[in-house]
Image 1: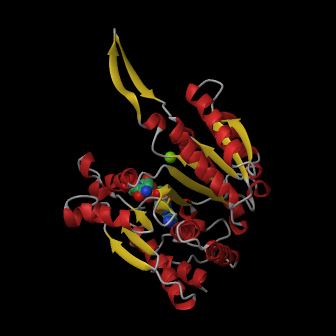
Image 2: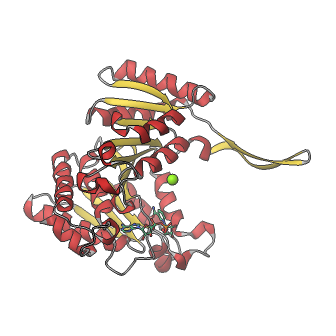
Length: 361
Ligand code: NAI
Ligand code: MG
């Protein structure tokens, strides 16, 4: 039985960058005898246009049944005035929620050829390869009570940071498993100095490491200090595991170490399926980029690297994932640049499919 993949290209540049992934999948079929059962469906504005909803029940069921879902991007100005319940983003939120994708993997990888694009000096970021694991389905964005309440003559806005042991343990486990495939080091970040959820987080992560992952080197850091260290010397880290709120901020910080939004992949993983592999959704970090949609200017690398993550984490093809990342690195090293990667030096930019050609070559 072939591994199965559901492609939801979505809106704006989503279908443009996904077309380059399709060419790479076809290449694997022709050159590596690696065939995938690929299904395609609609999500976001495209699904709304066709069905009046950003994600149909039928598409949701397909997403639950495949080995991995690869999503392009959703949204665009055409849909800005829709009611929140049918906005394109809701399609993505429903996928994440119903697949229970609690572990969000955001690599921050700096290809040598692009080191001058970073917000930091070249030697601080060149060759950087770290992974931030963010808890995605709990914490202060979801905790109850929440709301804006009247209290005497003042209004008060309330959110609640809440974590259970099982929520902490499952995301910590995914970080330790990941570290075993990498440099066997995990740094856990919270604010145990001022937050009860942070105290529990630190205790549970340490307990899990001592009981089941003695081969992993575990350190703890306060999240504010972690933010400083990320900008001072990011190469000290291998895997960082943290909660939903701190992970939101730290992963965006780490993203800017590496340059363009057009380069950043992500994975969101859930509980293991019958196959033993986790439920998984892969997507570039960027959105539908309406300002450049339809012009052949989109950088397909974020989406291609998301597929490389699928090869590694859903299809157990780590070596092919390495090879695909090396193909991207070599194309960049040879000077392949989409407009978002053009620096001071000038030159002629490649189109989206031109970048696909360079990577395939
Ligand atoms: P965006 O990520 O779409 O674009 C931000 C800037 O980065 C734009 O100037 C864009 O041209 C550029 N950019 C993004 N991806 C690029 C790529 N692959 N190659 C070259 N340049 C790229 O974020 P924005 O503009 O805030 O949102 C646009 C739409 O996308 C909105 O409707 C928003 O809701 C949606 N969105 C969807 C996301 C998703 O599907 N996960 C995530 C973020 C935004
Ligand atoms: Mg964010």
